[in-house]
Amino acid sequence: MKIIKNSFKGIKVAAEILKGNGTVAFPTETVYGLGANAFSNAAVTKVYKIKRRPISNPLIIHVSSYDMAKEYGVFNDLAEKLARNYWPGPLTIIIKKKKSDVVESATAGLETIALRCPSNIIAQKLIMELDRPIAAPSANISGKLTCTSPKDVSAKLKNSIDALLDGGNADLGLESTVVDCSIGRPCILRPGNISLDEINSFLGYEIAFNLGITKQVKSPGQLLKHYSPDTELYLNQTKPIEGDIFLSFGPHPKEIDGLTLSKSKNLAEAAKNLFSFLHILDRLSKDKGGIPIKVAPIPSYGLGAAINDRLLRAAEK
Ligand code: AMP
Ligand code: MG
Image (tube, rainbow, N blue to C red; front, side, top):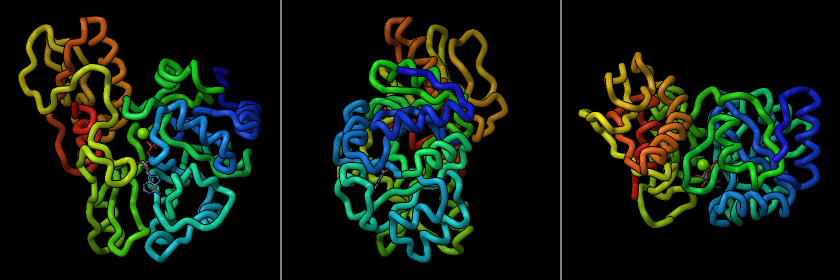
């Protein structure tokens, strides 16, 4: 894997690799993406293989503007309203797919397409330089911990991807909120940085969660077990004892190994730290012979809903 520094030239190099049907991990404001030219079946196929992702689980198609997005999806009133308000930003919008050069494998043969316009400037420039949409799931092995730093991407994928475009740590740390606007009653398929309350108050009416908490794959990407470290996670733990590994929220208890997601109980800070701290504690657990990670309760309001969604799936056996 080639490591590319973020620079004018670096973005050109990364775009060249994508043009040649290679795979490039790149930063977005949410998490690192594993990018492929969305017009290339060969490149998209590599992404599924690298991630060991079922080919029935479609990828998010990243664009650099709303105008670009309109070439690939049919924006109804709701989708347009959301795109105009939240893009560029951490919102993925699912709409009816338009006939285009985006390969069928990228959308898993569905009649819908998931589109996102990231606000991260490196991601934006990369898409513009490629002059095509980038199909990108998160840069991690399917079902395993998400990567939010170049270091974690490198540790997990260095032997299987062509390049890593280093853009430092992701600002937000959780995957985008996914809103399905392709159906009569729109719903949130994945909570993220933009909360349900925020979307409801923007729209002036209520849409619902459809998180599909299930062990059966009813619809792609809704498996209960996901985002998992190698070790076990025990949630809602309030009394860690010496010898435990503890992921706390608030001041970290003395004499206990681990980290706090946020000393001041700030949910945005906790979201940003969540995956990178789980990577660290997963390694610590291995050093200690595979003991579980205990996790403190996290409030469920606002961003806490997205954090708890990830933790619940990560802890599923
Ligand atoms: P990730 O692979 O972590 O980036 O997650 C992408 C998410 O978007 C997964 O949950 C996918 O299942 C979901 N997704 C992408 N395209 C579609 C689509 N057309 N319909 C429903 N979900 C989608
Ligand atoms: Mg993912």
